[in-house]
Amino acid sequence: MTVARIALAGLAVLAACGSGSNGGSTDAGYVASVGTDDAKDAACLTCHTDVAKDWAHLSSHRLLLGCTGCHAVQAGTPGKGHASVPACTSCHSQTTHQSLACTACHQQHGSANAFLFREQLALPNGGTATVHLTAPEGATPDGLAHDGKGACEVCHDSTTHYDSAGTGTPHETGWCIDCHSHTDGFAPPAPQ
Ligand code: HEC
Ligand code: HEC
Ligand code: HEC
Ligand code: HEC
Ligand code: HEC
Ligand code: HEC
Image 1 (cartoon, rainbow, N blue to C red):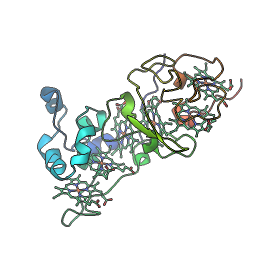
Image 2 (cartoon, rainbow, N blue to C red):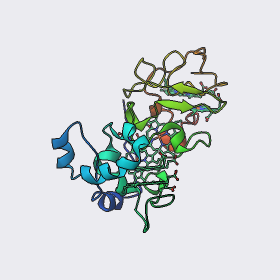
Image 3 (tube, rainbow, N blue to C red):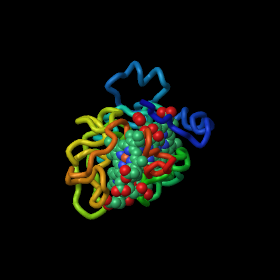
């Protein structure tokens, strides 16, 4: 099984962002060891209480960046526009799937799921679905596909494999990403 490594625009990102702050911890020693600043993030969270629930989950964003590693505070008092909002692609080189926003699948502030994958998806054709994804596995209960409820199934109305009804014809059950690469927007591989 190959788990694709993150592709960043450049190591300069880490150099530029590594001095950022970081959030309240379930493992204070580890958080301290990667140079984070709980107090600065806690100050942001006193107002942004809606972010706190997601931020409580450890993530590479929290450990490496902290709030101000992504949101540069602009001059002025707190209010609309007082902090910048970066594009995901200012740091990452992945391409998206089916014209979706990166945040259609990812919650950048943290998630109970692996890969910062959202716990709730807004489906392209309306409604929402709760998604469980905790292991880098293909068609397994903790992986990308299970009974139509997996991360690679819930949105699909009309695919021949892995649709939301769980009725897709049999297909490969391994790590989907080995063939449907994130850098190709999860499209099927070109025929050999
Ligand atoms: C990895 C970069 C990153 C980090 C770290 C980060 N954010 Fe964000 N944040 C974003 C992006 C990108 C958006 C815009 C999301 C969108 O377009 O839906 C956003 C959106 C927001 C918003 C707008 C409302 C919302 O929830 O979408 C607030 C408020 C916010 N962030 C606060 C914070 C705070 C407070 C922290 C630290 C506890 C933090 N962010 C850490 C990238 C980050
Ligand atoms: C005193 C309260 C307060 C504090 C502290 C605070 N903010 Fe805000 N922030 C606000 C308000 C109010 C808004 C506007 C919300 C809205 O438009 O709905 C806002 C908006 C934002 C947005 C959305 C930007 C936009 O307008 O598109 C981000 C991102 C953000 N804050 C990040 C931060 C970060 C990072 C910190 C810590 C360095 C922080 N905030 C500290 C009150 C605060
Ligand atoms: C300021 C730079 C920056 C921005 C902006 C940023 N990221 Fe990241 N992201 C990082 C870094 C650094 C890592 C950790 C790199 C590593 O693990 O090698 C990371 C890791 C990730 C991971 C892997 C997390 C895991 O635990 O497996 C995902 C998914 C991700 N980012 C998605 C996003 C999305 C979606 C956005 C926009 C909403 C975004 N990022 C915005 C810098 C950024
Ligand atoms: C259809 C859902 C979906 C969309 C849309 C999506 N991602 Fe992902 N992303 C995933 C899944 C699933 C994983 C875990 C599998 C993997 O490693 O590719 C992942 C993993 C990642 C990672 C971890 C590194 C890696 O490749 O393993 C990064 C970084 C990332 N995504 C960034 C982005 C960015 C940036 C966008 C928008 C351009 C985006 N994603 C759009 C589903 C999505
Ligand atoms: C947020 C919604 C969403 C998620 C999550 C999602 N897809 Fe899709 N996908 C779509 C839509 C919309 C279509 C168009 C066909 C349809 O609706 O059934 C599609 C079609 C496809 C297709 C066929 C067309 C194409 O783009 O090549 C493949 C292959 C595919 N998805 C793979 C995946 C894989 C692999 C994952 C998990 C990593 C995934 N999808 C997760 C929305 C999604
Ligand atoms: C060994 C390579 C491989 C693996 C692993 C794999 N796929 Fe595919 N997938 C393909 C190929 C090749 C196609 C295009 C031919 C076809 O439709 O059978 C495809 C097509 C698809 C389609 C689109 C069918 C359509 O209607 O156009 C979806 C959705 C899909 N795969 C989802 C998944 C999911 C979810 C997983 C993981 C559980 C997965 N695949 C694992 C190779 C793979």
